[in-house]
Amino acid sequence: MDEAQARRVLTAAGLTRGATREPALLAFGENAVFAVGDLVVKVGREAALLERARRELAVADWFAAAGVPAVRAAEPEPRLVEGHPLTVWHRLPDAVRPAGAEDLAVLLRAVHALPAPPFALPARDLLGGVERWLRLAGDAIDPADAAYLWARRDAYAGEVAALAPHIPPGPVHGDALPRNVHVGPDGPALVDLETVSADLREHDLVVMALSRDRYGMPDEEYGAFVSAYGWDVRDWPGCAVLRGARETASCAWVSQHAPGNPRALAEFRRRVTSLRDGDPETRWHSF
Image 1 (cartoon, rainbow, N blue to C red):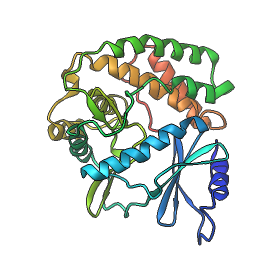
Image 2: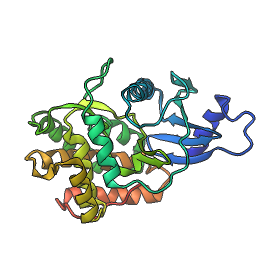
Image 3: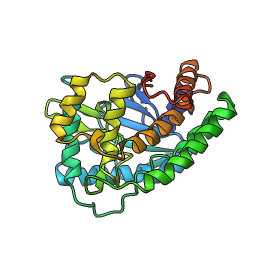
Image 4: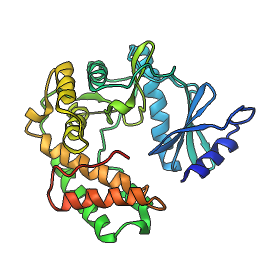
């Protein structure tokens, strides 16, 4: 799915009818995310993601009932339009400032304090998307690189399953980054709830450790995150395993953008090379 196809899905859903301006593309990753008037619409890449979209809406309702600041759904169920799951959300007020690591830590503490919801949450299948992302990459990437990531995925899957947690397991956001926090007039709120899961709380914390090591997060910002949360995941013996699994997934995730996007292909190759070389410090670039 490219941007043009996602816009056709919006039109087919009738969501652009009567609009005074063209929907603005806000993000394009697992979903194409558009601002349409007072709404935000997420268009998923394929029908297989419909159940995940349904669960994301249930999570939003659960967070609302529990008082966790987060994006709120405008429609209770996803639509399936031309083979693409589509969800509709209330648009948050304009941000008053960029979100920081400390904002994220405070929200994670709120999520990590929650008991189980009244519906089933899956485990955080960190490596589950690797095969799909590589399939979507197709011939754009070297088959040897795809085979390397498949083998790395299989090796890490068993190690992750055997980890002993430091924090009691429970609900996690699953993709805990400041970019998934919006700071409006009423304060920070979580967005992008599609990876909310029930698993090791360390999943949410290792993301920021990786941001420090791979994406250039300043030490002081990481320190603010640790201080606000109250614990540094790098002190946990399982940190290296969870970091390696997430690096594998993050590398494969970029591959789906490689067809027709030279920047994505270059970034994918950079990441694969650093993993093959066992280099933990090569700078990766957000995509």
